Length: 310
Ligand code: R5P
Image: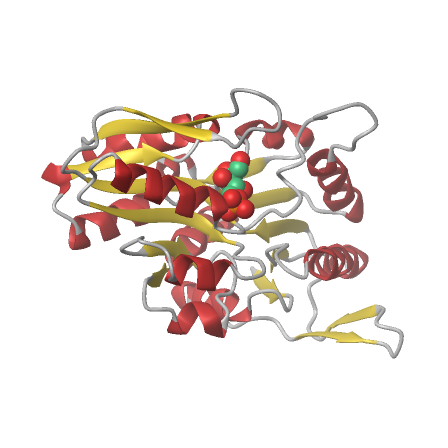
């Protein structure tokens, strides 16, 4: 087995390597003067089972190109099998046509990864499970939920917890987490009654006096999250926290979350946390390195990965 990291999240790749007791393969990923990417795998990978660890997070286009170019280099170096380990799969939110003449980037990126030469993909909490079907190669879509549940058990009194989906689209994900901890489920239903009017937040479920845990796959601008937290507190929730897999946290999101009434936001290290995230008082990062490391080990040993899904 060979583990190769791009530049998107080296600390996560190193943590996976430590878990597997296996060094990262030396791989040079650098830029020409015009910012074209150059890759040189500096060890022999002929006939090897190669895992390339690279979330396609900000700057998404650069990290995606790095991934494709490393896959290409590994394929041309005669790797036996190439697994693209993409903890955060960028471009996934454009997974259908919301209107005429719009793209489906999740499918486009799937095509690109496959065409570059990947034989398998390993990822966590895909924005929509059906994106697996956009590939014609095996895709293991792990869930961060088991890691979140462990952390929830350590930090919260589960008797008083209510799991909340911040929008109708996230109900399946939130319900699955609620089931794991035996908690009830509430839903924030955003509605725009008439075009041009602002959205009204309706809470489905009685959150009064409860410690609410918002669950989502992505926090980007933080808008969905902070609005939901305010609506829950208005409805009498005792406190509101959130567990979200991918901390995209664009623009002023960290400041927005720091200024919000959220008790804390827990994200994973699927995307490398910035310095702003590390110093924010109500943001905490839990690691998916062991989960990914175990999935890598089982893939390499041709053992079942599905038990890690549950
Ligand atoms: C949307 O479908 C996703 O699950 C997230 O709710 C969304 O991407 C969050 O975005 P933001 O933080 O910008 O509101």
